Amino acid sequence: MFDVGASELLMIVIVAVVVIGPKDMPLAMRTAGRWIGKMRKVSGHFRAGIDAMVREAELEEMERKWREQNEAIMKANPVLPSAEEMLPPPARVTPADILSEDKPIADASAHSAEAGVEKSAVVAKAEQAEFHLPPPPP
Image 1 (cartoon, rainbow, N blue to C red):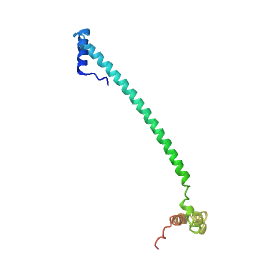
Image 2: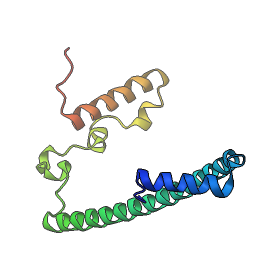
Image 3: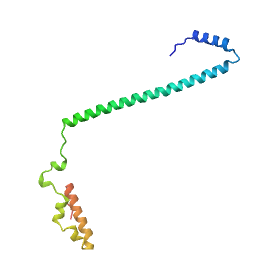
Image 4: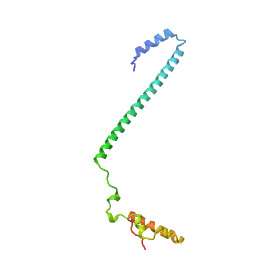
């Protein structure tokens, strides 16, 4: 960083020993070490803040590009119809169609013993119709 060679460092040490003296040299070195440590800590904190700002800016840039690409794709490809809309009309069977064929659930609930059987049979038929399952074996 400062490009201090061996000869310059030797000159600084000689001047420091002459000016400060050998007796106070350890105290001066400790003080210089503390200052250097504080400077490193502050520069590291500053560098981390700058890196975080750069990452946030890059993230915002990527999100903007993603939004633009997503909009372009959505404009180029219209919304596809759902699977239910693609079925031909006779194949569309709703649970309401099945319930209208059998006894209504309200009538089945009058018979307490048969109510559970009737409801489960109607629900089973509705599930078979929705998922096109084969009928159960006899």
